[in-house]
Image 1 (cartoon, rainbow, N blue to C red):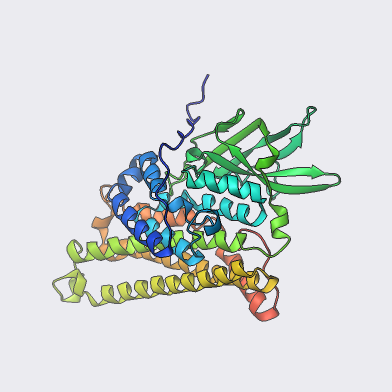
Image 2: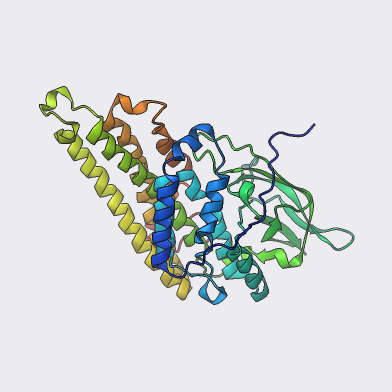
Length: 410
């Protein structure tokens, strides 16, 4: 019996996307795209309608290729621009903004650890409109060992076997970058394998049922004796044994998603308070927009969002500096700068989503408005990596001069 959760592969791109050539163009295109997808974001969430058309339009804008380096035909935008592009789209649709996060992440893994031939091939595929997803995380165990294996069979063919969870974007992808372990003598090393979505033995399940980020396609991927070519295998562990910006770049995108969702909720709150909310009886004013306690709270949320945005922009500059000159010190500084931005974007995003209801009142809780999608989205996404550990890493760095660990979650 066929599992109804098995997803159909994405069709091949029909047209080459528009080539974005500058940071300024990327920001303008992102804002125009966000304006187009904002109106139906609530319905997509409420109906759990996978955004296939919107995603095709997203790719057609050229935004999925903006991190491809200029020497390979892309715009090579700054980390700060990438973060702002992400936040702009997250303000319109939190789910839609997260889908390319691992796409950009895998392209950074490629930039750092890929061969020239691999870079030329995969960058061209991206500029042609092909998408990458991810198959990184594994569940069912209390450790972080990767049990998905890359091994050789008797015919000396490389094979991948294993099951991955939380595979955001895989359902929409043409390539699924997969984190695998490989035995090399007495040592176990990790690699990223860019596996074609249509490869025999690849099964993608549409089984993500989180209460937030509902249409990210963050479900399960199974690999059953999948044949892979050596040209698809990129060192992963080796890229963290030296200073690289893989981790800071991944995290700055996550921070931008949380900030953007908060900005979207804040915009909804302002509109609701101006047009629909009632002032409290003891305020002695005729409009909720003149309620002094409401004004104070709105000001506080604004300050938190602006502070998070400022830290995010500063972190972008520090990541760019580390990318241009990746040393032990510059990469550590980038990780700490991004961790600070991630802490505040988490707090500001959650605050804005909570205050949307507190200041708008009971009438803001209707299913028709579906404002709870902002809280559900930011609460779900902020669970990706705990900010409590970021405080600890920052403290060690500032007080004791200890560099943060090199991985993708600081």
